[in-house]
Figure 1 (cartoon, rainbow, N blue to C red):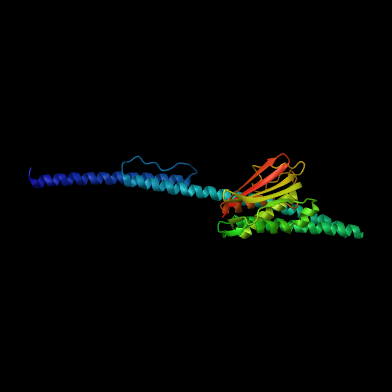
Figure 2: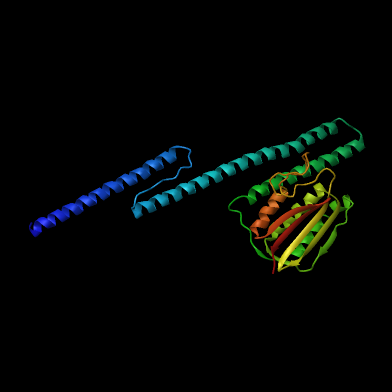
Length: 300
């Protein structure tokens, strides 16, 4: 054989091998495409499989699977948020309807009487129900706001002691009406890295929870522990309202079987969300007839 003939045979062999490789890769890509079409058109947990030796196509299969997993996670998140939204609307409807129904009843009673004492009593009840409804609507609005992915906090060095005492003082009348004098052990100048509006909201939610569900005793402690600001707020538990410490931060959780007209059941859930956003931790515990919430925030 001449060199030309040998060269022709080699080139032909190489060309044939290249064609076979191209055909094989085409079949492999077609297999991946068919699998992607099947996965897209059917509810399945199946991923793309590839058993060839081509590193490039193997990498393609891995990337396609990563994309499929990403879409599945998004779908799961969308379903979760949709369910959460529907549950929120259901609970909101119930919580708003309860005081509205009550208001309607007291307005009817008010129209049916000329007794000044009864008029004063019904007016006071109606005013309390309106305030409760306003609190529920405001809390619902804030809950929606804080769960928005675009909601951000501005973290700064804050005097947690001052903010806590200011908030406690603003609820002096409520504690007095409960015949409770809070036991306060707040160290001076306990600083934390936090958002001021979020911190005030947390304190308000915790105090409102005490006003609705607490009884006999309120204790507040704030100090530094291992360079972290640690807050403990405790309250006595009303008879028949033993809370589940593992569930108190769940949305719309309520410790008693009845639904209070002045409680939306999301105050502690909002508090947990805000604490998490400030890189802190929040927990609850029950010891006998004492319910305690502990918050730990980054200190200075």
